Image 1 (cartoon, rainbow, N blue to C red):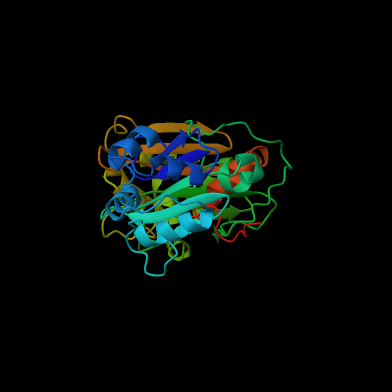
Image 2 (cartoon, rainbow, N blue to C red):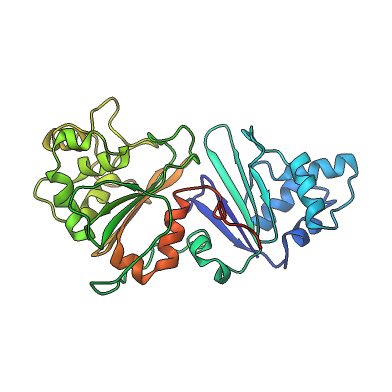
Length: 335
């Protein structure tokens, strides 16, 4: 079984992945029931604090609640006694035989944590990226003509006639211009008809009125591409040099003429990426973990195309799903 915390972690993927010895979620909670120091036990078990998780054990101790005997009993106890914030619809605690998924916020950002009982091999399209904790993602790609069907909702930006290939953009961060909350996710962006080596030139060629209708991340990516540049990975290297948790130019019109907005972005860049930032650019995937500070940790941006995704379909689909919904099992019915 695995525990994953999607939060302000000091890791390039902003998540903590911990292997646990327990066979089931119920076993883990029963093992923690009645502990004299729930917070200390959680930190020793899970590698650090997990916001609000100690509340269920604290409540159990104060109320002298017996340990749950079944998954249904655990579900009811969690719903009644686990502290989560912002759960107006009663949908932030989700437990079934596959996993426990919890969403909350720490008054600064949203976070989610997971106890995954299901073998990753049973749902690789949902779990591969969630359980992946080694930087960087692999770089090898399939041959031309490879096919990738993602089956995940994405936002489409058309800048060339449609074709069998596509480039996907996934930015994971703490400030979103397309959603009100960190985990109210807008989804990845797809640029149909392109491979990654084609992307920079195509972005740069779009005039200002055409870019005005794009999602914010597509506009920012266009602004980061330099004149006459053919490598989109260089744009992510510049992204690593932008400061702050919300790295977009304040109050600017990102859909301005390309040379104008690119010069504005250049004026914000630090001479070098912040210490700790990681950038990797390969022909069919470019990726950056931008180190912000010791509070927010990292954010991430991935650009990959159909050829990379065809070589790593589970990783690609699960990454697209990670950008679409905080719960990897959303929309999937438990058997």
